[in-house]
Length: 110
Length: 116
Image (cartoon, rainbow over the protein chains, first blue to last red):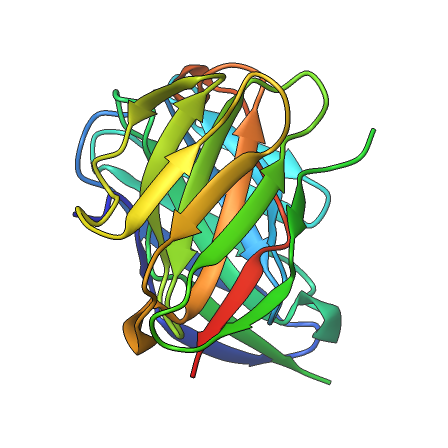
């Protein structure tokens, strides 16, 4: 079964707008990670947030984690056309398995 | 420090042939993971290996698929007697220690297998 489930499945916005993607997970986690995947490419690690953190920033990225709701959100501010990609959340399970959701496909129109 | 290296990037096989996908983890990483991504889907865990050991293969199909990570050389994902449904992108990832304890897992660029 999948550990991370992203919402929405697809998101289309104009350049300069903010993009918010959500992720829900099922079991207790030690940390949660967000990745980006451009079409036909590998995954690029964006940010890791630990279970004792509530919010983390990295450049134009802001990630929140609510362990009581078992959810996380990724906010990309002032989006650019180059941000067009699929975004995945992933959380390691206790047996070292990292489970991914189906991803959110973000399209940023110039 | 080179990243996770996968080859081949693209592989075409006829039904019934064997596919071998190779993965060299990042330098200093002894943990390797293989994932499969079907078109328009997320990544599905297949197997987790450390040097010479399979730690968790709960995501591997029971037949035709095998993986190894020898003491020397890259990790190999082997698919015997490929079928069209095996067409997918196969991603390898590595980490210095196990990912559960907060270590980032680094991914390769993937190997795209097409079965014709």
